[in-house]
Length: 399
Picture (cartoon, rainbow, N blue to C red):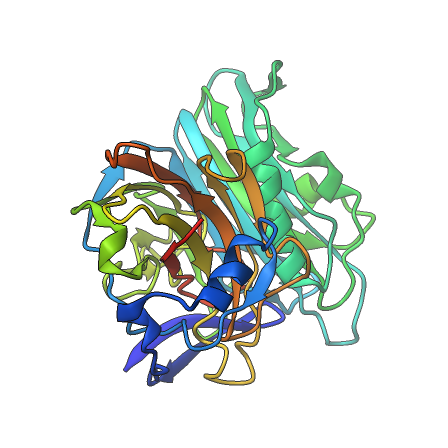
């Protein structure tokens, strides 16, 4: 049995099921010459058909997982759907230093009727001196019902963003919108507000995620709503402050292309368990189901004893599990190979990938001339709105 986070157009629920592998002789024998040509001729980031190749039963690389120093990490995704016209979905204290915030909330108001709202992050200075706040990383999408796009584009924008050079000042006891654009954005029923932020502050503060009407400043609404909404564990990844924000994944053994296909699996809730945090309103411990917003720095050493190159692909292994898990979209930073190093949206030629035999080509790594060991570096974060896990499959190919 497995437990994983899934979604229908990004609407996450819990699914319990049995993973079924597809038989595949190619695992041990390598890919056929025809499939080899398909792989090496596919543009980076594009979807391709690889019949008979993909399986959850592929050999997995053993790895060491190291907790890296990182910012205080807050996520607001429980309740994911804010059902009341005005309410606070998250309220958490933060300390001076660096803070990462992942905002993933939906206007879910149906009573007394569906209505336009706004959803915004507010930070209050709870210290005795002026607070200076400066963005280090920033991603904010327009409210949308295309949750897959928001998750994929949000990661791309976050990875590509640059630190602000000037800081904003907040007087003691005062509040500001963390993202001023949100205070003006209209959020229609069922639209997602997706924000991914990393910022630094020099005074203690309090972060609130508030939903209110279009005329009321978010800071005013946050001040008059005294209690955060109850959590709804059946819909939403989690809420609270989590002590882990960054992992380093280091493969324990050097991958050799002569040994055939292999995969790296993180964010599966089993080999890589969900992180645990604490929710300030109730003091309860909360699981972050999906490890959304956690950033993984992945290192794999590899060599080619047989002269083959190495294709890196990913796919959606949960596509057949239910009607709610029909798509996966992601963004990663990948080291250089046939294609240059950089940020790559996956897939880049369509919104999502669905299920096997469809995969996405991430990179093709070329063997060293003397067969020496090389390093693959990836920056990955579980993609909001998408099924998990997203296996990273390494396929030896002839170049």
